[in-house]
Length: 546
Image (cartoon, rainbow, N blue to C red):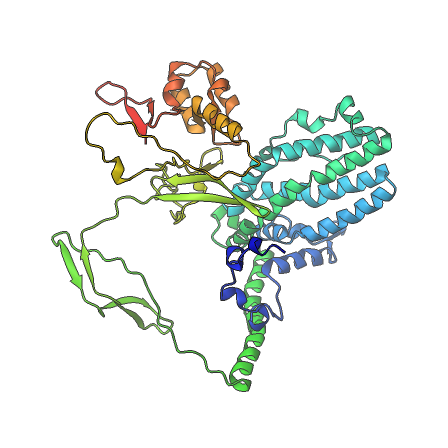
């Protein structure tokens, strides 16, 4: 053993905090006598409604499911009750049986199962939450528009190819909403003859390859459902109340009775689940005779301002400040821990800087650095929050802002312009013409080709890049850009993206109005561009980015 190569534990073991050393078994939360959530209860009602007969006016026997199908709380609960583990295990059983004896019947079972279990419900959720104002609406729209258009087209092509070549039962995608971006040609598209032949040498090989392609294509849809559970949980709570008047009409009397029962049933659940806490309290206090710690005083952060005629004001230590009332309707008083001198200093700017670290397996990398020049704005620049938005912003910054443009595209915060400064007393040169040479010593793994890296960086600095986003295209259109030029700009920026940086080699010769609205990023230390709007003096306005 090479003892010199051993790594000290402090270099790779981050240790555990006190909160991580708490055992869940010693808390009252995990051991619940009735751990069912509201979503679980709503899902139980839906399953139970299948077993109850309902006689309509013609005395035809049906069930009670239609009474819950269009109710928003039940729809949100169906998202939360989606069991990905059940889906995965059932598909694995189908696949195991199929591989033992590949048949078109096995492919037909898989296609209909994934359509009825994942694809059709996902499309139904998107259409049912449309124009409801609930958080799940924008989340589903964003996930479908951003992550699923290519996946759904590929899946439709593979399924249509199975219908055409192996005569499986067709499934209908015509009811899918416009959010998916499917065109009439997409609904009937299939693999070409050459593409189908390339799946395998024999018909059996092609059947297996098509089966695996359809099964592998389900991953993006499962990820989308998993990503929407947080918004679905929030929407479930908001769907009971706080809706617009037109949406409240969907709460029919029989549903209102169910929701009222669930709200009352929560009190019974809380009382029942409190038995474990009472048991732990008895064990700790009576059996082990442990005494609880003393009460900890509340703390509050207070912002003080003084009148304009005063330059400063001294507030002594221990001064009581009146706070809100407690459960007994008594005033809560907070005392200052330290003396403070309040002056007229004001916060003029609120900005954020966010480093987006990403992890891949055991490695991490910086995806990008984002800034908000004005953190109080929805987009971090100049767009105000909506009137119904609380106007909160991430204190430590984030990648995506809270501004959503009219096309419902999530807008990222501006990319931060990074640089470094060299400072040293030896650089304080007073006279003459001096030449300063700065040499950087970098440690680079021997697996990298330094010459190739240097050449790639040098080539990147030698190019000119143009920054393009949806707002700049709109400005260019208002400035009089012809439709052909607008179409070229749209081709450079996909409809699912808000912004893109274009290499000058892909940049055609556009009109002066376009170049005036788009600013280039080059190797100069200061990046400038000409604005479309001119000041009142008639000269063009010059704006610069440091």
